[in-house]
Length: 269
Ligand SMILES: [Zn+2]
Image (cartoon, rainbow, N blue to C red; front, side):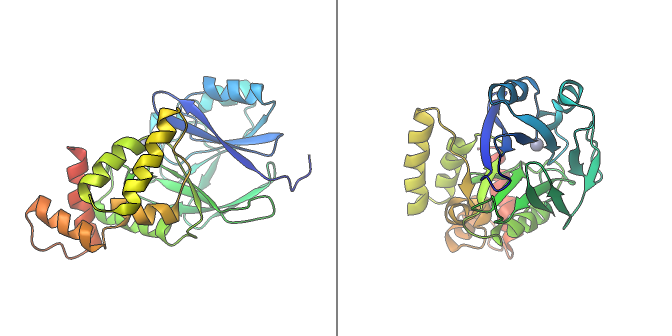
């Protein structure tokens, strides 16, 4: 296999609504957040792929629960990348903000972002365009979802706002590989926040058509999320106005204040 063969990214469905993403060159594969080992093993065997590495975004069990089985069954020397400060079973490579990962097989280079909010030590993996990567790609774990964001289990609205701002600064064509199929319920909430957002209305129709065929609504893109995701639009007049109305607060001076209101609203939506 030529080393410049374009990399492919495929979803491996797990549990009720998780996606374990597999990046491969037709020969060797990386998997992101294997919460379960069995579907990953089936996928690798069916596609004749060798497991070459495991990328972990955060410590939750539905993202880490399959690591030890995969190491047991495919090789204890397979590198497991994970964030500093988090308890990740089997982790061998600790990564932090701005680290550059040069992975040889499949050949890909990632930059690491620290994106606290959902958890305090959550990270994301970003690959800009390179010889075998045509569009930038982002593995964002449970920080960003299509039309939504992760619950704030450990971090603050300010941290989540800053984390989403890092994503907002990436190229608009960045393909975003979220780890849950939450899109339709996120869209229902986003429409409550912005009932007149025409981009959101057309995305809602597309997403419903995809789900009606049992197809993933992912990846999304940064450009699309900037148009339809209320959590990335906390500086927009319509979102600010709705946050004021819902919270009955006249003064929401920063995007973090707005995010705090709409995240709390989503939690009880
Ligand atoms: Zn999580």
